[in-house]
Amino acid sequence: MLNKLALFVSIVVLSLFYYYVYVLNVDYEKENFIREIDNGLLFTKNLFEEEQRYAITISTLISQDAEFLKAYGEDDRKKTFDIVNRKIKDLSYLDGAKIEVQVHDKNANTYLRSWDFEVKDIPLSSFREGLVLVSKTKKRVVSVEVGKRLNIKAISPILQENELRGSIEVIIGFEHLQNKLLAQGYTMLILLDKKYLDIATELKDNPIIKDKFVLVNEVDDEQAISYLLNCDLSVLGSYGYFQNKNASFGYFGLNNLHNERIGYCVLALKSQNSSPLKKHYLEHKIEQDIQGVIIR
Image (cartoon, rainbow, N blue to C red; front, side, top):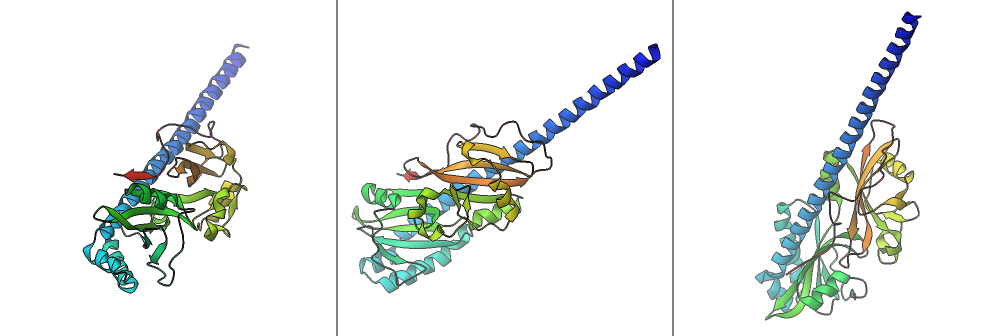
């Protein structure tokens, strides 16, 4: 009888021990995932800020370039077009991202685009908040802004004797960021609230996620998109993580110049275990979303 009792106690103790080891192992794996996601989000936020600094630097350099100002002041569109594209080529080595430049006149109409010389005289003030803000303040602005596309836009005023003569806009897409993150093992998905599709007309044929967001960037990882479609995106705050049995995701909000949420940057990681995280989101580590910055 005592032998049976001792055997029973031993089994119970061993079971509790292995259960305790299992729980510790699961918690350790979860902590590793959360740590990896946190590191990825911080890395991504830094990349966004670097791209914004790069864009505003290029915008400022062109807006103050003597050769550009001379051609623009003489209203020589062809010469201005050639100068802008040469400047883009000369300055692109600073970061390696693909950049486009749009020049606006003092009335916030398109003067020229670096990628299409024929386009001009398009009124932009009705839907381009960054451009309107530059016109009013004569200050530089950089933000993730909705236009016909969603991208990083850095706008600098063209000033002569402190009078506004127009503005220079440098545009950077998300491909450069996406490739940097892919090299680190992260799949990046940029989500825009679909209510902005009336402005972002070039995104109207892009995939719709959960009938709430449009996927902005091209993503080759079809599994990541499929996993995201099976997640509840209604719980998203300003920063955090969520998970299903196949993948883990981290995210932070993207805000416009009025500090209004326009979408999210989401990072996807393939899960190594099927045990779901207890928390689906958190609100710390990063105190604010990526948003527009007015530079004095």
